[in-house]
Amino acid sequence: MVVKKIISGVTIECVKGDMASQADITAVVNAANAQLRMGGGVAGAIHRAAGPGLSEECRSLAPIAVGEAVITGGHNLPNRYVIHCLGPVYGTDKPENELLARCYRNALRLAEKHEIDSIAFPAISTGAFDYPVEEAASVAFSNVLEMTSELKYVKRIRFVLYSEKDLEIHERVLSVL
Image (cartoon, rainbow, N blue to C red; front, side):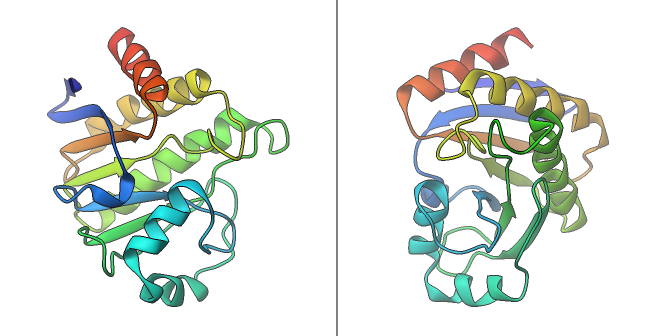
C-alpha cells in the first residue's frame, strides 16, 4: 500500500524500499556525511550502486555543513541526480529541527533549480544520527508541505523508508497533516 497526498499539484508518497532502486525518480537524496563519502545506511547503498564515479565527483564538493545540500550526477544509479544532504546529529547539532528542515528545503530548492520533476527522500538523520523517527517525519512533512506551493517543476516527492516500522510511522504522520 502506498499512502499518497496531493497538495498544490504535488504528489507526496511513502513507500518501503531501497533508495538505490527508485528507477522512476529523477533525483534521489543521500543522507550524507560531511565528507560525502561512502558510509553505512543510505549513503553506503547509494555509493555502492552509483559506483566510483560518484565518490570522485563528490570530492570537490566536500565538506558540507549540517543542513546543506549539494547535487551530483547519478552515475550508475537509475536516477539522473543525487542530492546529498547532511542532517543533524540528534542531541549534538542544535537546533535539530531547524537544521533538519534546512535539509529538506535546500534539497527541494536544488531540485527546482535543476528542473527536476521527482525526488525521493530517505528519513534523514534517523539512522546513525539518532533522530527520533516520528519527530523527524513531522519536521520533514511539515517543511515539504509548506514548500509545495513554491514548486514549479517538482511534482512527485517520495519518502523511501527501509523498515516496515519507519514506513508505518511516516504514513501515520503524513495522514494527519
